[in-house]
Image 1 (cartoon, rainbow, N blue to C red):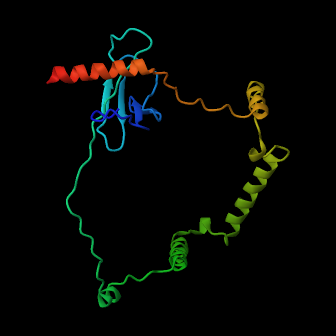
Image 2: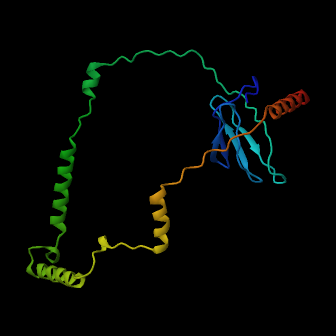
Image 3: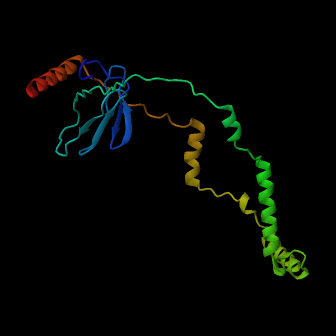
Amino acid sequence: MDAATLSPVVNSQIMINRTFSSVSDNNGTFAFYVNRSDTVVFKSLGYKSTILYISDTLSGREFIAGIYMKSDTVSIGEVLIIPRVTNLKSDIMNARSKTPANFDNARYNVAISAYQGRTTTSQGNSNDPAYSYSMLSQKQKINAYGKGQIPSDQIFGANALLLIPAAILYLKGMPEKPGPLKSDLTDNELDMLQKRYFETLRQRK
């Protein structure tokens, strides 16, 4: 709720231990599960973040908590916006030339070819008969070894235990994602929270 107007803060984000949990509904109410020593942070645009620390000595299963958020609007002074005046002569003199991408690719390919021509020895030259013969012999050995085998890109491994859940997912489809918890906060509980909030404010004064 808004600490000043007591109006509900809609769609405030709820983070538990830096992990997104849920958002508040149209009435500003929410529900979620926590453990001892958890840290819950409430965030909303235009409000300061509110932190709720869960005590490590907490006992019980269900609790009611009232989160009162303070506005965090910042006012700025007068803003003056004027059009930017361009100088045609300056734009022409300082214009950057755009080199086509094809030209850069061609220059790179030529440089690579020149480098390979300088660094390739007779051992790695395809024009050398001895090198060509060794490469052809190695290729024939690989083909003879792999003849009659299933290519590696066509091998498919399957486990019978994995086929059952896969078949269930195929027939029934993916399960629906569970929705966020819905708050069942009653009007009496809301009034009690507000009374406690006002009592706390009086004690602070």
